[in-house]
Image 1 (tube, rainbow, N blue to C red):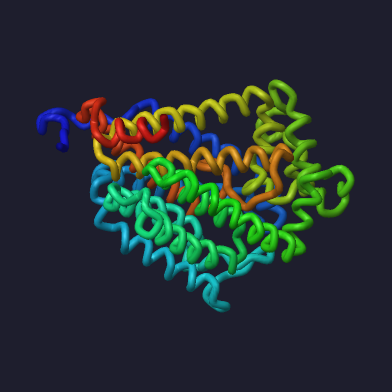
Image 2: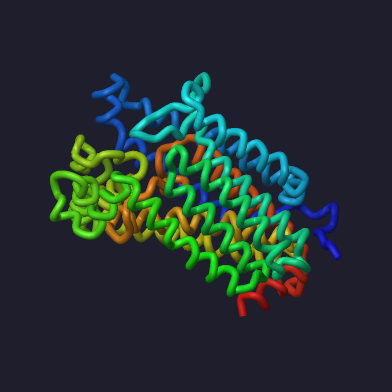
Length: 387
């Protein structure tokens, strides 16, 4: 039975979650400018080039977040199939030469007037919405192989294949991770999950071993200092950047590694510049904000009162937590290099807008959760699965 606040009661969104998201976006704007100003001035003649584009994306993201909060998460159910179809079409289009734009050896963007669209980011959002809707609809049959497991695994395989054509290994891993998170939350048999992982290991090995640039990333991860001047250069520079920050950092704008030493300083390795310029204190603030998003996101999900909302909240919260963890671990040399942005912080318009839209869904969940009893069926069922 659905419950909602009285019609005359004001809708209250979680202020702690909202402040954490806005805090991350603000940190991102500051760090994008700091990390990109010198590069933008040298290459484009405008030190504010990347900053202005990120501000535009943040403004659009605020609109998308506000719309998601206003419309509510329940309306996403009717968009599950159209969103997934649109994501698949975009992934196909980006793989077509002449439509997809290539940069850094990968074809991941569709250039449109005034901005670039990254279909893999749209696919992440659509995948969570579809999985949440499908698993909620098939709730009584999720534990079966033919209905609850195999169709979702096959569809995930299609999305991963399209991402690998770009190639985008990081997004592929994230899509698979989201599948397993939501299948586990929905009550899929653990034997199916473990078995599919064991079967996928040889495929993952082939995907890595057959790609010279992925093998180079593995070598850089295993011993970046032995490959200091070739494949391990980026990781070594990242470690030097973070290490030089100390406790309080060198000061905003005073980092040295962004001066053409550390590649992708404003995108994949912006965490390194943040560590260099703000030190352990700044890193601590950043990690604390992500922890707050994780805490309040899970809290809103478990109290949603409906299965679809619970899965939806867990999915979007997991995306943010997974990307943040992987990005920071890569910057510190704890994982091989992946092309995953630091959520809300790294430069990238599509990523920022999509993640702010996801945050809007979480805030919508937090508002509706206030009217749902703590003994709501979706939350209690999920706690039983976790136990």
